[in-house]
Length: 100
Image (cartoon, rainbow, N blue to C red; front, top):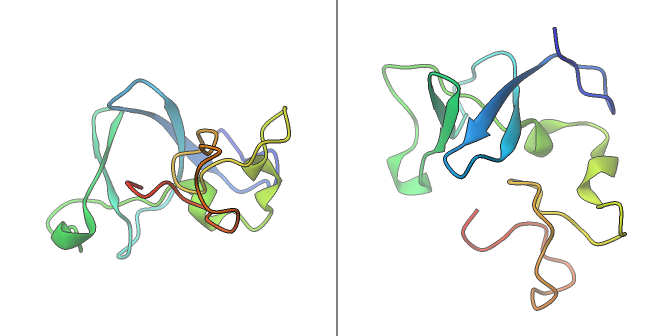
């Protein structure tokens, strides 16, 4: 079983539609915004939440109790939702991309 190396909670690995590895909380939740199609994670827009009739997952980057992974190796901040490096043009206190 895969676990988060920061908080040691179990995670389920999937791939985004763009092929990026995404850690999900292993247990589905009522407030999740990600649905799985096989091993592909599809982020559901806020307007279409809650997800009904199927399991909904949360990205572990959003729920991890230890957020050290939000800084890249180069020291640049990462998006708390998709974990990609933040654009230098975003506001310094912004923790997510506008589209996440």
